Image (cartoon, rainbow, N blue to C red; front, side):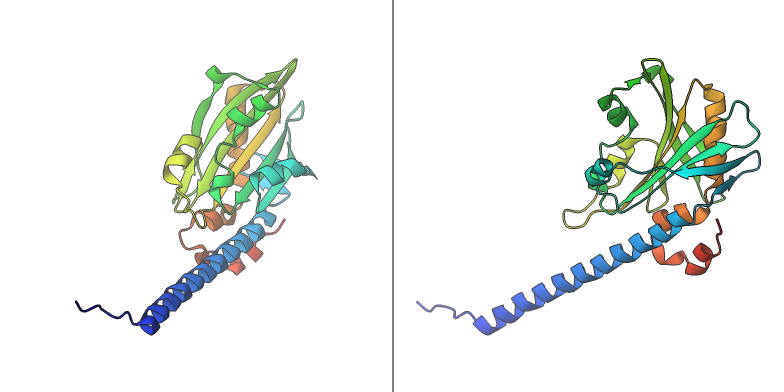
Length: 243
């Protein structure tokens, strides 16, 4: 019986070609993630000290440090955390705006207010949870969920939302888990924002404040993370935003 001889050279070359394609693909994918991360970092830093909408002006008071353990748990690629005060409101209303980007969505899955705040001792008032959308531009609306918490005599309200490519805005973690499906090798980028208010504020006022703050954020922040092709966000648009 005749046996077929294997062309060792041909097999070796095929393996090398496959390895080469894989290496090039990984390198290009890595470059894409680096470029996107840099784009989002620049966009985050463009968030101004004055958040202006048609109905209100919010001025930055201070930068709020992000706890190091939170950065480690979420594996944050970029983040911004700032406290703002609404002008012309008495008693003063303050809000902390926190926006974070994770290069790999898997590190953020499961980390959102209904899970994280009760784990820190806050009681969630589930019946007060609401989801709303804020008209932002002709291209999209920003969706968020509003959660109410209490701890002894303290009251805390948190508006939370996610955004990712392509043009995905949602206040639901379950929708993120269903629609953002990271690969085993790389993962898809994901952004989350939280707007925190302390004190016993009415729900209608809270929705108004959230709308004002979101509308005051430069569009480049959302565009950088939600455009399917991040290169459409030009450096000139980012550099043209002043703080």
